[in-house]
Amino acid sequence: MIEVSDIYKSFGENEVLKGISANFEPGKISLIIGGSGSGKSTLLKCMVGLHHPDSGKVIYNGTEFTRLSFEDRIPIRKEIGMLFQNSALFDSMTVEQNIIFSLEMFTDMSKSEKIDRANFCLERVDLAGTNALYPSELSGGMKKRVGIARAITMTPKYLFCDEPNSGLDPQTSILIDELIQELTDEFNTTTVVVTHDMSSVMGIGDYILFLYQGKKNWEGSNKEIAHTDIKELNEFVFASPF
Ligand code: ADP
Ligand code: MG
Image (cartoon, rainbow, N blue to C red):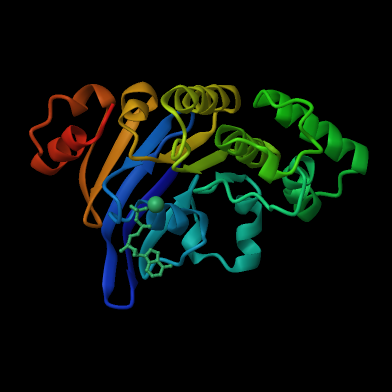
């Protein structure tokens, strides 16, 4: 379980997060939704330690991550898998090299163990045999899947995905959502997905956190979302194409 408590974050004069609190449960997919610029990616980056919040806490299973030194964060960071916005693959590396990168950083696995693990992860995302390809040879959907394969190499307890559906056609987008759902069930991860994709909201959102101008405007389940009378949320839902 991940607890976020009263997070504030500014960039210069721009106050982006204004006191966000939320709980993210294991074995569930939590979605952070909201319009462009509402602070979704910033919140995700504060949660994984890529940004330091100005104040507030991020707590992983009772351990206050935000208080730890860089060194002391490593055990938790090893349990975090992250799919970055735009996949963020290394263009000069093959698919296999991209996937085993974190194993090289964090483990002392032998070469053959690393390749076995890469093959397992590639099979898991339905990309067996693509080891030697370069990112430039992949479609957008394949890049996302390689990004997911890379996120699961270390068998994460916590899985973060920033806009996993962006730039994908609706069918591929649904396949990516199904994959995220399967992995969450299989590994019992605490999964946090940033999205503004309404079909994801209806399809996979166990818990939804709606950000509006850096504040929590609404939280609840996707069954409740249709019955809310929160003006900003209704405008967001109404403005989003299904
Ligand atoms: P979202 O992911 O919801 O579209 P972001 O969290 O990326 O929103 O951005 C929220 C606001 O924070 C925007 O106004 C953006 O310009 C600003 N911002 C995000 N990252 C940085 C940064 N590294 N430096 C300065 N401003 C940033
Ligand atoms: Mg973003």
